[in-house]
Amino acid sequence: MDVHVKTGKKTGKVIKKDFGVYEVWVKSPPVKGAANKELITALANHFNVKTYNLRIIKGPASSLKIVELSE
Image (cartoon, rainbow, N blue to C red; front, top):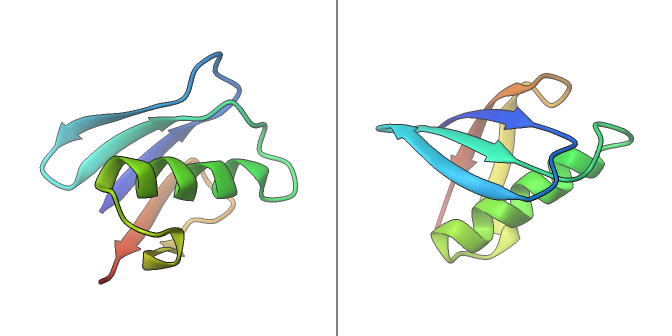
């Protein structure tokens, strides 16, 4: 799925934009992977899966990412 991450927001939420396209707001700044960890946690809660079922495939240092969901 394609994910656009917006960091430094007051609230965290997951917004579905289109089929397979999501916008995720996270509170954490993009420092030392903190935003990526919060992103994975937010998506895991949204899809009701464990965090180890999600993996950032492309764009770990970018606001545009490709995330894989496995079972």
